Length: 425
Ligand SMILES: Cc1ncc(COP(=O)(O)O)c(C=O)c1O
Image (cartoon, rainbow, N blue to C red; front, side):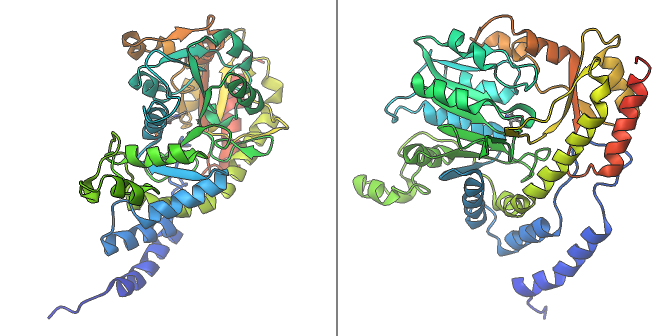
């Protein structure tokens, strides 16, 4: 007869093997400086195995625990974890457009946002039949140029969607004032800005609703994953229904709702429309261990960025690189470089040089989104020529800045950048 092994015993046997595996394998060692490296280890893997052996793999306690920890970390009351950052944006906008709200975003209403952005920061606006109104970005921060807000404002404006692009926080004091003064919703897309702060307060805690992504290439990862945060109870209850089928299960008011509609079985009681955007316990298991590492990861990113900024100072006439700013904490999603128009070389040549030397690069996200073919099918407005966004799309790129890049790698990156720029000095 086969001896029965219980979960505790199995975990005890598996643990040393997993620990040995992670102690003897360094994911960050690679001949290529990748845009992203795996940031998980024995704790995440053991937590996942624990879930798999328990057979509780769909959304449950580990997701709820991560939601609680993450909302506390950001400084928000409520969190709703979902299966991606794009789903988080979709859910956030669907919640704000829900007819049960006193003042929902309606079809034809306008949402001011930036043209230098990510695709799924914009597409959910189309899904609620609202109109994105694109303003340009500030060329230093790559985030919304707040000087254009007043020009973009009309009687139809209902919200501002601010994107903390590449980890640089938007000018939150101006945005909060503008939204308060004009009775607008403030939506923060923080998908690239885990841990970023404006005047000592974390991004994602300023707006009515905010979103994060935990995709593999972000500061912390749940493989795929995202979260929606809010301080407003009514919105939180809505998010819980919209995330899963429109039912009542994760709502605080489920007992009252079951009582109110007592002719329907409460197990399948649908009080609103809904999707299925739920994460799994595997993602929750990752999240609770990844969050503990976020501060260490951020410090490495900060150290790398400071090193490149200090050492690339003399090349500023060819390239635009960020500055270290006093009142913000930059989360350094990557390290952006924008080639000056008068540099005497093209972005393509510079990028080719880096890639040839095994340093991976990417464009600055979707670039000026209005130039993307997908935009031909939908209605949107632009304020002014959006010159900075187009220039950054044409001349900008970024390379990785993550916890796998330490002194040796950052010095190598610097050497390769210098070996290109020194031809032009
Ligand atoms: C600013 C921004 N918003 C939203 C998303 C979507 O996140 P996800 O890839 O998890 O769907 C991304 C993805 O990179 C992003 O950069």
